[in-house]
Amino acid sequence: MVQYDYIRMLYFNEGLSQRTIAKRLMIHRNTVKRAIERNSNTYQRQNVKEKPVNGDFIAKVKAILLDNKIKPRKERLTKTRMFTLMQDEGYIGCYSSFTELTRQLEDELSLTQEDAFLKLLPTEGTMQVDFGEMSTIYQGKKTKVIVFCAKLKCSKCEFITAFPRQSTEYFLEGLNRAFQFFGGIPRKVVFDNLKQAVKEIKPDGGRVLQDAFLKFKAYYGFDAVFCNPASGHEKGMIENLVKYTRNNYFIPILEFNSYHELNSLLHNACVRRMNTQKVKGILWKDLLQEEQDHAFMPLKDFYDVSKIMMAKVDCYALVSCDTNHYSVPSSYVGKQVIVKIYPFEVQISYRDQLIAKHSRLLGKHDEALNPYHYLPLLAKKPGAIEDAKFMQNWHLPPIFETYHKQLQARSCSKNAGTKEYIKILQLTESHGIHKIAHFLNDLSKKNNYSLEELKSYIRFKQNEKIHKVTTMSKMPLEALNVVSITAPPSMYDALLKGDAYSNG
Image (cartoon, rainbow, N blue to C red):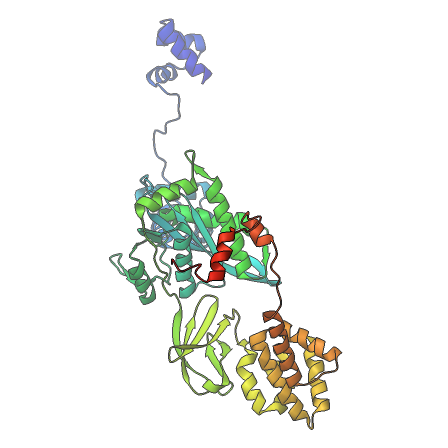
């Protein structure tokens, strides 16, 4: 490079001839000529050398490159792996020659052309939605939870809530909660092609929607927009929110005991960011207020996201749904009932009347047994009290078992004492377990053991509360700033005559 620069300086600056420069520098005149004619001192290959080692393999490498292009990203071959495969078939060239060949073929086949993108402005009233899977410790066990994320494109406000799985009722409940959090219904919602919304993608790019999602969409009236398959860049904001959620709320691994606790934490985090984060100096919450006024549809009522099914009550007064069993009053054995499965609750109805309500079981092959559903049946079969599963699962204060044994000891038979004890258990439904336990402790101290004694004691406590004597103090008058009440003497004369109110 130094010689090239010196040659050009001597020729253009000092005006020396090519022959003189060649003599002075003791180099060939062709070298001087090339330096003068070329504006750049870069190496230029004059003749392309033939590579006979590539000849028989060009077609094979082309086929591999074309096949590689259409494969999913994680299944594509690397250049090193291609080179190894070609060596197995007899290729004797070096790695650099092989990679040069692949680059030439990729350019020839236009396989290296990358996608171009257009910059888009955020549109008011547009929300992006996606799910993310997070690792947590739920009630002491390592558990995967599904996090529903929603973000508004214009105001940047975000909403996050967690569910145990990604089924349809959880997906729709997530949208319900997002609408509630944002204070309205965005006119456009952008989705991935998740199976809870899309049943099928047509060859022309159209979507066949799931019936449940179509009903939900029709109820609220928003426009659903779906991204192209494997095109996460089309909803980059929500993809980034899922990543942010994982890095900031679930790493290190989060421990929680209930979904209500976890979702309260996530809700507070969303509110905190909405009240502190800004776009061009304006708080998210202020931008949201503007978006609500101009680009949201009003939210009046919530769509019922429950999954509805018919079921028959079995001989154990249980209804089966989602691999779990839920109890109903034993009088409904053999009846056909309607089961509504909500994200965290199960409601069971018979002829439009709600007969049972349970927290939804999140595991498999579990049972939710309400003791009050079985007490009337147990009263007919008191001998089964010790082996009844619902009694073993019912963790009552110790005074109940003590009182039961005393009733059996003071009755003519064990069954008679047990029947009396079952009626005491039925009282806990209306008065509460802890209050009845307190009453039983009071009666036990007085050595009173019977159902009638308990009923009498309950009436006594109720009457004591109702007829408790209260005395009037000065506090009400003082609260009204009234120091004393006086009346003129003429008022007393009028009262004595009986015409104080005769004038109306």
